[in-house]
Length: 350
Image (cartoon, rainbow, N blue to C red; front, side, top):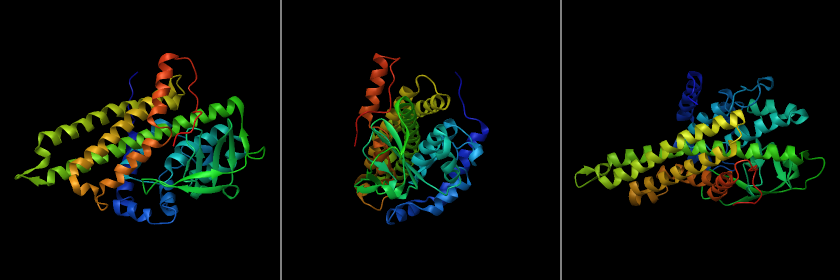
C-alpha cells in the first residue's frame, strides 16, 4: 500500500500550525497554568472557527466530516505548540463516539461540539482518571462494561496531582443507572475499544509534535551555547544524542500515520497498529525530553526554561490512553493470537 497525505490535508496542517504559532506561544501556555481551569474557552472557540473540534463530526451536524487520517496531522501540530486544550477528549474521541452512538444524544451534542460551544470528557477502563472533566459539558464514562452519558452536575470531581501543569485530571464519583446508560454488551465493548484506539492514536500524534519541538529546542540551544570557543552542538557526544532522538522520531512517524489509516478505515489490525504507534511515539518523545534536558545542562532544570513545557507534555502524554506496558501487552497478545479481540482494556493504569 502506498500512502501519502493530500495537498488539502497538508494545507489544513499548515493553517493550524500558523494559528498556533501566533496564539499558543510559550508565554500563553504558561499564563494558562496559573488560571483556575488551565483552559481558555475563547481559544477553544477560535480553534472551532478553523474546524479542529468538529473535524470528525459529520457535516450534517456542522462538522467537517473528515477522518482520523486528517486529524492526525493536526494533533501533531497541537503537540508541537504545547496546546493543552481538550483536543483529544473532545475532537478525537468524544465526537466520533457520539456519531457512532447516534440517536438523541448525537443530535443534542454533536453540533455544539463542532462549533466550539461545548466540551466533552471521556473516561475509559484503561485509566481511573478523566482528563478535563472540570470543563466538560458532557461526560462519557465507562462502568462495568457499559457506556454512560453523565451531566456535570451529577458527578463529584476530585482533582489529582500531575507533574505537567497543563494537565488537569480528576477522579469522577457518580452513580450509574438506567437513565445514564447509553450502550451495553457487545455494542459498548466495540464503542469503548474504538474510543481507546482513537485516543491513543491522537496522543501518539501529539507525542510526535512534542518530540519534534524538544529536538528543535535542543538543537537551537546547543548551537548558541559555547564552550572551549565552539558551540557545544559540535561535540560528538551531543550530536549523537540528538541524532538518536531524530532517528526514533522518524521511525515513529510512519507507524503513527499507518495507525491513523487503520483507524479511519476500520482495519482488522487497528488495535495493534495503534499500540505500536503509541509505544514508538512515546519512546521518541521521552528520549527527546531526556536529551533536551541534558543538552541544556543545569540551566535546563530551572523553571523558566521553555523546555519544561514539552518535557512535561511528553511525560503526561506517555501516560494518556494506556501506559507502555498496556500497549506492549496488546502487541504481545496479537503476536500470540492474531485473531483474538484486543478490547478496550480491563484494568486501571495510573
